[in-house]
Image 1: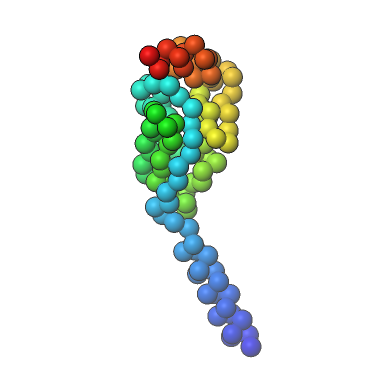
Image 2 (image 1 turned 30 degrees about the vertical axis):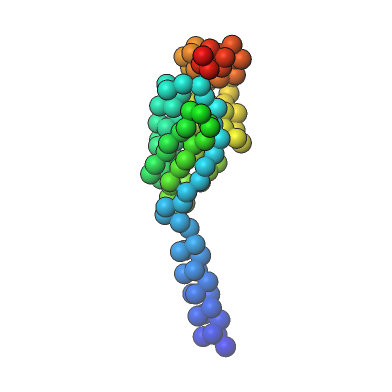
Amino acid sequence: MKKVLAILVFVFIGATGFAQNKNAKATIEVDGVCGMCKERIEKASIKAKGVKSASWDLDTHQLSLIYNETKTDLATIQQSIADSGHDTQDIKAEDAVYNEIDPCCKYRDQQVIDDHKQ
């Protein structure tokens, strides 16, 4: 009975070790209005350890990610983005950090948003 229990524990531990995906894909919403925002968002994403690819779409505000789940998670990636001054679907950038971004990138300002649509 002890051998069976030991084998089951070993199998369970082995199975959970393989449960994390080294090429996980995810899409999150990130606020921004221009090419400078795109560059800042993608750099902040890549800065999170374990992110292999980050591509932000200006029109849809969707950030497509490929990352290693054994090294990072979506909350960590979103915090890195918020720390760069951009709001994500789950984490809002602190006002002090947001205020430091370039005036043309003030995505919370309706006038700036309207200016970028023209």
